[in-house]
Image (cartoon, rainbow, N blue to C red; front, side, top):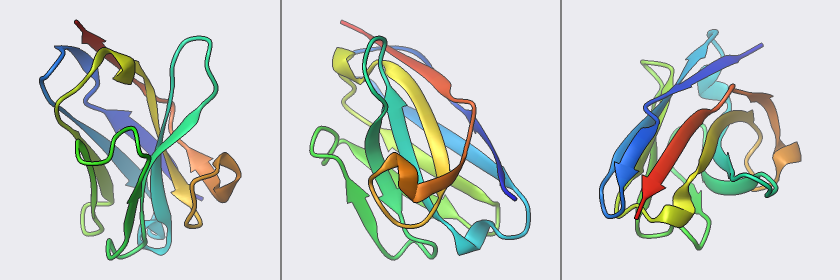
Length: 121
């Protein structure tokens, strides 16, 4: 069982940066791939980024590639999402998830409660 708590969301102007954190409980954090997803109002939840259990592999949605960076610190049971050059269309609730490697919602077994990111133009 893994419990996930996101933090770091907020209101920023376009072009600025935010770093999201996701703290995991449990001793099995390092066994899981981790993903970030987001959901904008009226839209389906979509994949943002994923990182393998040891951080050796990462994958990004085309919409964030080159602007966002996912990383993890297994000693701290934490995964991060560094978001640079933010755009208004990045506005969404951001969720972290733990599970198998993949880009689909069903690839992940555990989810956090989400953190709101709002980017103003």
